[in-house]
Length: 285
Image (tube, rainbow, N blue to C red; front, side, top):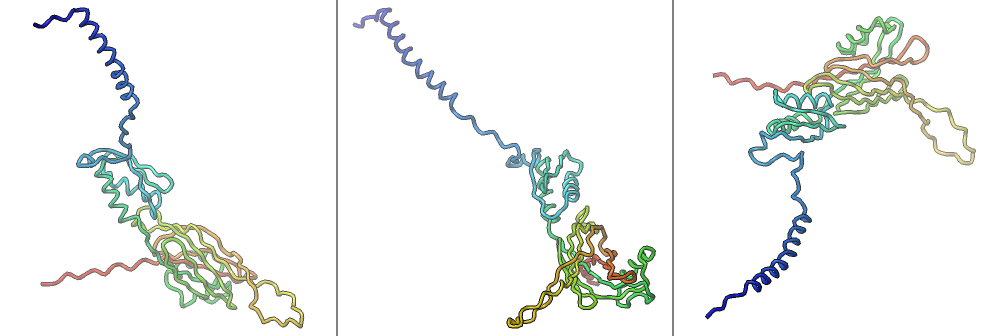
């Protein structure tokens, strides 16, 4: 026969169980508060999957060879009327757009942001105020460039001293020889302006220097009898300038007097067009 549990005893047992459970619940709440929150998704990280093409996000692209204007224009061309934000940060291109536009810009940069070589012809002339005409070796573009400046250049004859060819993606140096075997050194640095297919160039720096023989050294003692040495030379800057030009154009970079008032050096620079790729003739039937 089962005896009933007194009510007072049952209440005491329930009260004891409640005291035991309360610390466990408090500890669980404290652990939940101390647990680190799940890391939020990075703002510039594109979402994965098919939703990436429709989701707008920001990304930064490193530009190596395009100038700022060309890179920004290339980005805007990929937007094609869509909502975009384009900015330039010290050589980096920032684009805020949907995933499809980011994919298009990635492909466009792979095609356009690459080194493009440019050929230049450098011509060194001796000009004189005495009559004599144009040097017969000069190309027609060079003759036209000189004719265009005949009102500004007070010379009546031009004689070819030397020419040099440069082919570079940014900068190059050439060495030329003038009268009395005088060495000359020319340096240029250029960049393309505007659209990658544009034919406009900016010569950011052009410097022409001449080697000048220094004064003779005092003679050595007779007993030493040193071997003869080549005369020491220093380089004197004759022309330093910046200018713009187009591919296919010949420009008069500058002049420098050779001594006296009748003769001078004249420097011409031609941006030589790259030869067009040969077209394959269609087969006739």
